[in-house]
Image 1 (cartoon, one colour):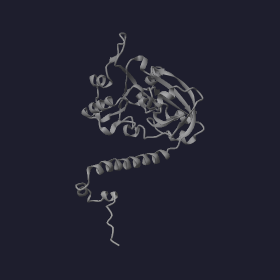
Image 2 (image 1 turned 135 degrees about the horizontal axis):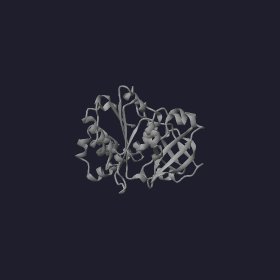
Image 3 (image 1 turned 135 degrees about the vertical axis):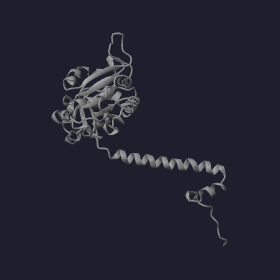
Image 4 (image 1 turned 90 degrees about the vertical axis):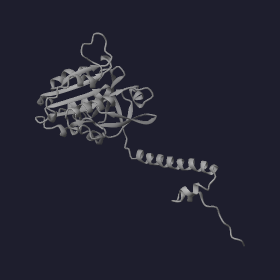
Length: 295
């Protein structure tokens, strides 16, 4: 019986001789092969993502408070007293967690607004949430007290305050926040970082106008702790007499950095602001190691 010569398997085209093989194959076959290879890579990526997602541990917790904080912003408190592992996971201001709402699988990352001492004492997390159309945050802001959501443990390294300690050595701390980026900054200020033992602690806080500026009711307490607050409004009304424009411009116009070696900074908020402020600080001699971010 004559022997049979079988055509090469398409899988052999993944061998090192592939470039030469392409020169002898019809284009119609190559057009069929390319989507196959792309689909295999896509399937592998999806499978890997599914494995990563499967490792996330979720805990159920009820909302104990939801109320307006400012235009498009909400105060939200979630009771985690039945989840001691979540309570103990919050150790630094600037940490965040993942949250899911019922019947919507896509999670949202939320910065924790309350200081670690609050969750330890009250068994609850506080958040400042901006409602964005079509997002998990919008669904969360539409819930009511008693509704149950799913949370992970606190994540991230937060603000590494050891890098700007002791206060006697780093007497100047410049803090920058825009919009809902004030959320982890509240956690920082209310955690206490010896602001009253430093000669110059300033918070540049940017918002569109006063109706969009959260935590104004806390300003007096923050100032009592040693923080000078500089509100900056990009679209104020005619009665506003304070700083206008963007945070980075307001800071650049009145930097007043007497000793860059003794200066630290904390940034949270809009990306362009963070990048421009960082550039200004570095140009003035502030060490990049002393510029803290929560990611």
